[in-house]
Image (cartoon, rainbow, N blue to C red; front, side):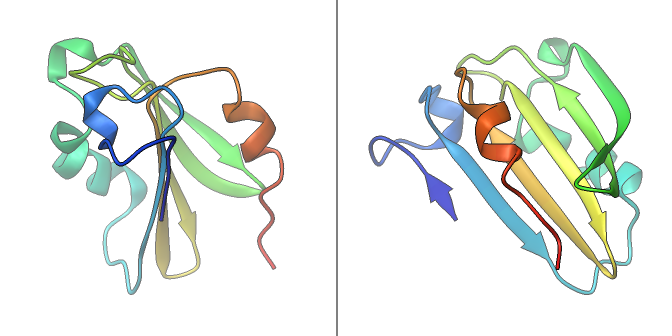
Length: 105
């Protein structure tokens, strides 16, 4: 699922682009998945931080990048049962407002 102002892709720096991906039957932890796939979302030199956090009560990793053409602004990898929920955001102020509406049921 991609939420965007236009049909641009996330790494083109669209400021209102949020991508959500669910990996079912995930055998990898959030840490392993992020280590293997972070290059899809950011150049290594653009990664500012990777922090352990919680997201709607679930264990997660938060990666902060440059928020430019070479990198997402935020990437969340959330462990939910046997699945990983990936949320990528290119930048902009609305992210916290959108993420605050998420609930796991």
